[in-house]
Length: 311
Image 1 (spheres, rainbow, N blue to C red):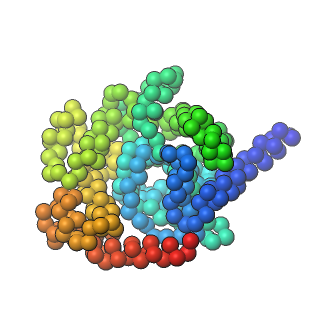
Image 2: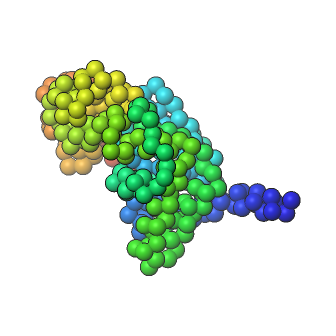
Image 3: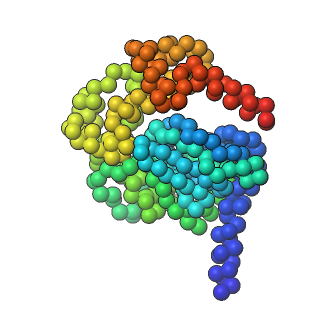
């Protein structure tokens, strides 16, 4: 009975300790880099409407609050009891749905290195995944072992001199827990040397680099060694969208980044990301972001200024 009480107490303490540490190293709303290259901390003091973004391969663990992520028509909601894993780059929309000044949304994001995952997979006795494609975004339960591994990584922020030596070990344990977990077969699919999912991952890598170029789906299918029909089928199974829809999302996200930076003209931004028609660019941009390129850029800059004023 006493051991069960201790276990229950430890389980209750993990999220609160995680929240305290994230809050300390992320004192203001926004995204915060840390002394650990692959570790990012996120804080929000109020809910916000869905924001389009590209999730890179990563695991997101919430210590406090909750979030909703939309991939196509699919909805994923997670909090301190679950975590979300993106196994490849995916264009999504996300919204914080539970947060307040007193209890802000607090989250840690650990970027995943596919090469490290593949190396680790070769050194384990985990069963090989079936040769079937599955969605590249999924939820999994945050059990005690995963929470403890995340806490060990967070605690290293208090001793930066230990980071170069111990952070890679802590990250490796987290990768192992992800691969071994109940949903870990999804990750194992994408890092295995062969199989449809791995070929789709290669196609995504190609699109990330060449998104501004004209896309012939048939040529990309040949490049990764698949028939066009099979490529379409498995690409949609993994990403919830077609290759052309995926390319469009990448183009518009990059255009938004350009407009927030040093590109003032919407037509120039559209041309740089591959649009030949300014009107088509403006129309598709407005459909995704809810405002014209110029209006959205003004809105984003205003938000940045307001956020800076509250720091």
